[in-house]
Length: 520
Ligand code: FAD
Picture (cartoon, rainbow, N blue to C red):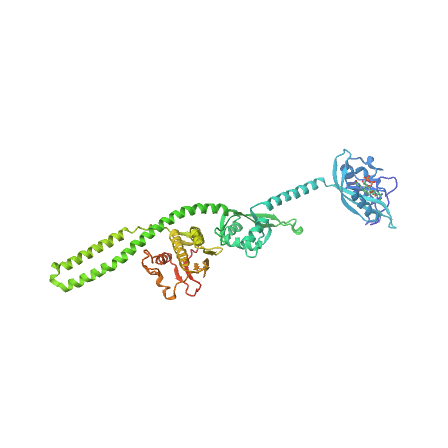
């Protein structure tokens, strides 16, 4: 850029007269009234010209600055290196831009965003320097405040135990905090934040859908993940929409709105664990009572079963004798004795039947089979430890609800686990392993497999073992043979199926399939 030399001694530069027919006064007025502080100096930075904005920015009147060095504005706090850089660039005939701390006439300080440039003559020699600066103190303060606030928010979000993630409208992760990344490592196979988002979307489909369609925030939605340990992970989830304006320059005057989704997750597993522990204590007492009642029912049913045989025999013999004696039957002492024996037997049967403890009908509610298995494992921990049984619990990460009678289903699972423990304890095997797994089958049933490393059930008995009073145990052990019949009864009550997997050869594998509720 080539510019004309101002008239020496005058305090205003003259404008080029060759430019597009504009008068030099136009340039002079434009510089004079420009809203940025402009000064023109000699090669030692002595001020030859300063415009109005220079006066208003620095507080010095025009007459006070003409002839003074630009260093009059220096506060002495700008590092030497900055000035050296400024002068070095000017020495190379190149412009320089940077920020300095300037001092006004009233000694107040301000940040000056300064651009200096050499003014060259027609031979390319520097003849003046042009300086332009504006007070950016407020802008800097604002920027600094925003930056500090960002740092504080970042520190807060990063150190928060709550996991947070921001998703774009396509549910891609825009940003996440370390707690979220930790959770992703714990809950997903590949440990990726995006995989955890997929898992959350599967579990929070309805609230996220409502949030996106109606803008309704959601809070405290609880979801749980079974990881195979004693207790699952419980998360309380909150969601809210964030609306931000489009950042692109081309839509500056017609800004569109962009929507993001903020998900916050609080791990409430410890709280839930405590609640479950206290529930477990109550459950232990309840189960003990139920076991006692089941034992009584079993004993009564066993006694009825045993008595029914002889009574049936007596009845049959009585009928035969009645037919044989014909008219003389009424006075026959043997027949009379047999009739009395039969009546006494029937009476005993009736009395036994009436003494069976009544089972109180239980309402069917949505039940989580994983949770029931976990409870039963907790209840059986002592027996498992005593028998040196290693338990391998592989629950489905997420299982649909089964509509069922909770305590009946729990008893059924307990019976199967007790059977497995007993089978392994009885046999002389070294490896005592109990594998329990759950999964969803055909999108219709919850399948539970309980596999033990005991002697197994012979193929030919695979159906028989479910019959009442059938037992592979010695007959002197009273009250046996009703366990699997009870399992069969409970599974049938829930429209499910139970069978022994005859293809499993490492022990016995019991398979229970229960249809799940569509809402689950
Ligand atoms: P100085 O001794 O003046 O200079 C510090 C360093 O700059 C020295 O180490 C020296 O190497 C170098 N230096 C100084 N003068 C020259 C020179 N003529 N040629 C080569 N190197 C040199 N300063 C501000 O603080 N605020 C301003 O708003 C400001 N505006 C300016 C506008 C223009 C157009 C120009 C040319 C300079 C401006 N300066 C401004 C810089 C100013 O001239 C001083 O260099 C600076 O203020 C430092 O002053 P000082 O007295 O602390 O040190």
